[in-house]
Image 1 (cartoon, each protein chain N blue to C red):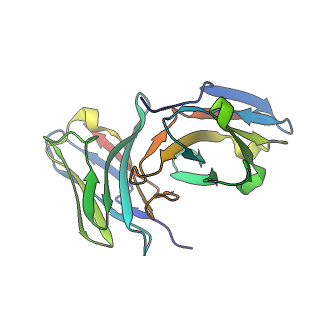
Image 2: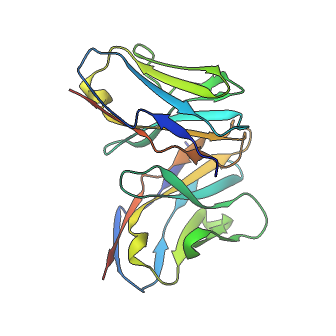
Length: 112
Length: 114
């Protein structure tokens, strides 16, 4: 049963520290999405990639967030420096172009 | 602007009762639509999807949804709710040639009374 995996599942850090979240998409999927979920804003699309190339990162604060796909099996989302307002659950999802997105279990981030 | 509205933030139903969760969208073109479910501490799981064809679609766990183009709606239904259905439900809408990008509703939290 193919699944999207995300690490770490939980992260507690202090303000100003760098945070890196990792996602392994389902093998064969060519599109990877990063979302952030908070109580106030709900699910927000931060960025997404097609065939490892960024298609849209307009939802991402550019000054502190960066997203990359070093290879087809790994997507990363980095926050540097982190701030308390970045506390949220970050989800990765993968899919095939304009088809179903399959979500990972999320990384719960708490920035103190 | 493109938007997805789930008018009910929280719904409580009794176990065994029927359920309907509403979803309305505002889009400039033919959409494709999804319902996802999220249990506490979990990721989003696909319940069902509509791309084309029969406007009544069946999903997992006994759920179904009907696409009504004239009403811009894609409501989720279940004839008899189980306690394990308590979760948050998200409607999502995509548009062709948008790279697979989805717009999500704010979610409806479902509670089930014994």
